[in-house]
Length: 105
Image (cartoon, rainbow, N blue to C red):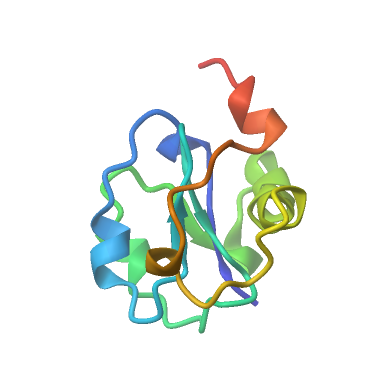
C-alpha cells in the first residue's frame, strides 16, 4: 500500500510533503505532486505535513477521490519513468496525468 496525492494539490503544490518524505518518492508535475507507489515505504510522514489535506493512505481514500490511486501510479508508467529511486534523481515531470491536466475546479 502507499499514500496518494489527490485533487486538493492541483495548482497548489505546497511541497511540505517533500520535506517530510524520507525516501524522496514525491515527484513534482506541472499542476500536481505525485507519490510513486513503488517507492513509497508507507511511513505516513507526508500526510500530516500537507496543508491542503490532499494526501491519503490508499485504504482511506474517500470514494470521490479513489481514481487518484490509479492516477498516481499511471503517471510513472505513462511518462516511462518507472521507479527511478527518488525524485531528486530526475528533473520535474514533463507532464501531468491527462485527467489532472484537464482538471477544472
